[in-house]
Image (tube, rainbow, N blue to C red; front, side):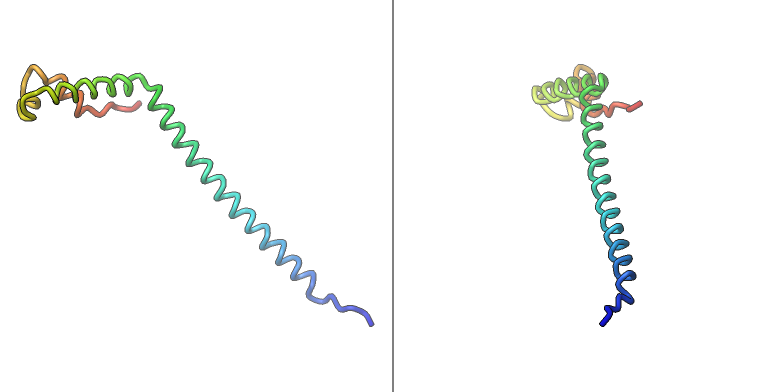
Length: 96
């Protein structure tokens, strides 16, 4: 008695195609995850090495210290003496 393999090659082809689809899907997920991590790392690295950002960060903390010493928030925001510190707190550095 001979074995009939009639539809076996079709099932093998379908199995190979499904496996290839799954591997492609996993590859895309992996690449997306790596790209997100790399983008986050690049952002933090640029933030740490950007001179304008470091300077703005230092001025921000100086401004916060001056604001804590001020008699009131209104006086801190409107006084000419503390104008520089006030502007350093609300400053958003421009990116190139």
